[in-house]
Length: 260
Image (cartoon, rainbow, N blue to C red):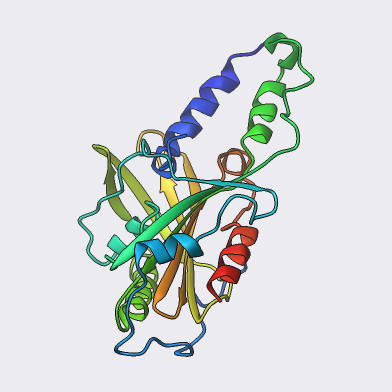
């Protein structure tokens, strides 16, 4: 088997280290909806126990395995950029602002068959076949879903901060994750799912400072009354193949249905 592809893949995966927080669209307004469904000033946040009943569970998202977010996932991204901090939080699988209560789940897209099933040895996959097979085996959306609830109009204010951050941080920001510096070189608004009362979606380009490899990751925050659903999706195989992807529509649809 040729080994040059392995080196290229290692460099690519290194560039994506910021995106691996769980360890392992067309252009348009980033803000969907208006003040409809606004929370009442005296609205009380849901408790953690209530949120756990509302977040997606195994068997509720067709084609996805849903489970707990691994306790051993990498530390959240931190940044000295106050305006961009809400985006760093969403890309860490966290709510954009501190809530009264929160809970989360991990939804992993399933594949019917491992692309390497037909190979008898690594040598059978020479001339780029190994790299292609690896890309296909990793071509699956992995989405972190976080539900967070706020008192009063806290959810609306938190969503507004995300919308402003997408506009203010177009040139990206520098973050730190587990002692490693990472660069978000570009942030742009993308078409949101238009679910809930309001929603904001964005694409962030993660770049490896060593060799300039870059890849996109995606986030979306949706407000349902005084509760926010924050989504963060990464697809390593799509990144390697430079294939378009987005926040998992099936995951958003299933979660939104539980929050109606």
